[in-house]
Image 1 (cartoon, rainbow, N blue to C red):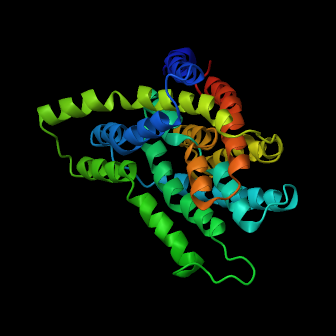
Image 2: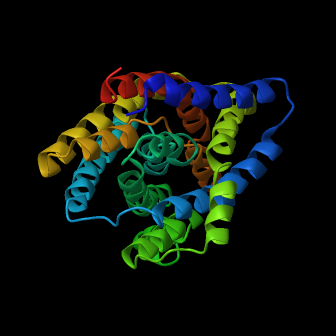
Length: 316
């Protein structure tokens, strides 16, 4: 098992280089968007396909992993919604953005580079990514488009909007690459050596590029918002970084008794809020300032809690 220092030193150095580039204004928000699209749409799908086609396909025990995650996600999302409404005074739509930021973790830019570094962690991590893409996007979109009093529901209704969001999430390149890789693994199909060489070469840039982009956003997001309220950090960040992973780890352990699955579930749900939360809140124009505060502050705090979590999970 690799040490925490061997995993996190290059990871934090890549994030730090991105943050420094952002603070020095070498790159701005336009470049960050372009780089994030490159990582999300091209580099990371290639890395995922390269990994999944060479791994063992999921077994029956994955059902317990999936059930544990979904149960904990629903409980945590419900609590985040209630806290957003009662303590933060948000509307249903604003609370939807808050719920999305609380439940959706930074799996692409931060989680996957870690999961790829620990033997046996990447396959269950990718399965959880598929579940998150389907269900969290559906719940968040449904709430952020919830009809106001006296307002006609969106075309197709709230359910139709949620299903559309889930379908778009299923079609994202990382999910598609995961499913193709799983298909190749099930069929025991071996790619030609030249194709494998390309996947190894190109996929190798995904992790560093994603971490660099994460660092850029840490520097850029505070500049985009004139004020970042600390209130959502105090109310929702404990749900994101403490309660959600604790519940998921407990349920996955009860359902599977598998140490690897439990460790992966803890890592996946203990990641800081995803940059995608800012994109979604801006798209639906709901709770943009609070979401930016959660992502910015949550990333800084989350890097510390992920370090502590990995130290426990990896024994040092």
